[in-house]
Length: 351
Image 1 (cartoon, one colour):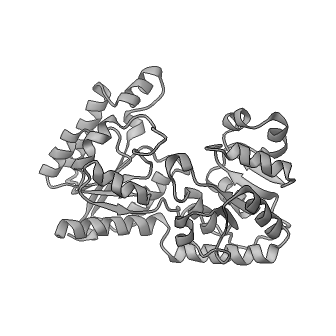
Image 2 (image 1 turned 90 degrees about the horizontal axis):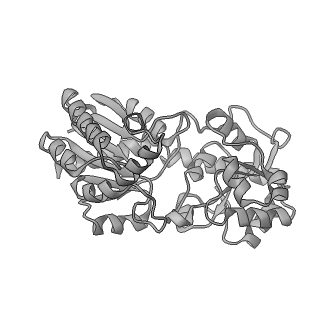
Image 3 (image 1 turned 45 degrees about the vertical axis):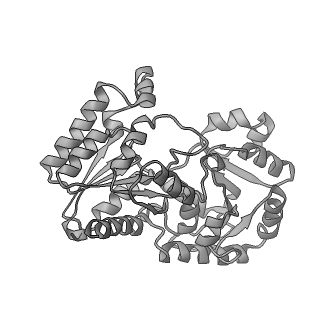
């Protein structure tokens, strides 16, 4: 079995612009496979009503069974030999067994954390289906043992990655004259981020926060919100240009999900942005500290690093350029990650 002989059915929650699953789907289409198709779970199992929300939490009911039959029929019609399921919440164990009986190699790509402390809903079917997959790919080291303890046959470590179609450096140099954002954060107020940003604001740090307005309004005091909030969610070109035009891009990991790095860890650096991120063992593996990215472990250190680098454009540009080279040369993009995952599947099938 070779890459060129693979006929891959990619099962994604959605492939909306700016989504990581769209980046992975585009990467698969560029890979020279014998065939590649995508089924968007969201098209068949939307979450637009109260009944849909109950169905999502329970993963039970006629819509779920029809979706499973659709996957079976589609795979048979197109002679699929690999199923790559991206966060497969709605696949039944019986469906996976039938696919394997037809010679389909089953890959589970789970970027979220089904065994983490956050206890997100919707995992009922996945817990039962997990042992049926031939290969599981996870992005947290802590997930390797958790998946194995729950019946996984083979588990490999992967990254969230960046989309080379979306996350790339500016074609012309960007200077501080063009950087309208100072200390920038783009995302949601998970964990204690609102408390962090309130502390930074009180310390006089010039913040620019973008993301979903309602959660930030709920978490931040009105005077802080008015001072630091700068536009709603940013996607695609707007997101990339915001990274280009930020003097410092802050990056936090979601501790409530046991994250070891963030999706933005790869996106910020791939875009050539200067990244100031939480210091984690994973970040230290991905980027050389103070050479390719800058890290902090406390509010005090974060403030000190901002005060050190905000007026130092030359150092920021040098570190950002090195981080960008690292992201692209080390294979942190979806194309490299998808190719590596499929090569691991081929090797496992041959063993």
